[in-house]
Length: 75
Image (cartoon, rainbow, N blue to C red; front, top):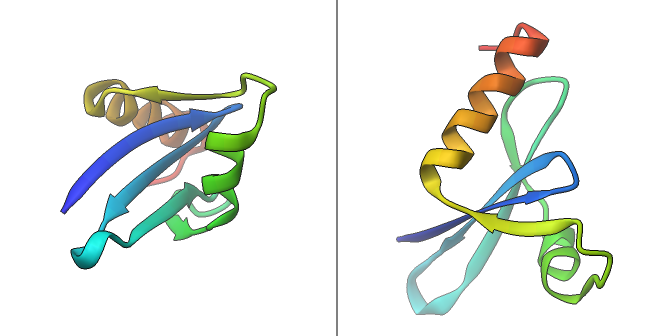
């Protein structure tokens, strides 16, 4: 499965391409530190002209998620 990594505002998001080209989007949940599917970010990432969304590398994503979890005391 192919993954892409993003930040929208301050929220980490990743997409995962499933078989047959189906793409799912998962957004970081501030209260749990888990990622939950949230299709709204497909529109926000690709049709929002505010400039709040950007693609980042896996390494940047992992570092950013760890920083958030450490700051919030999440595992």
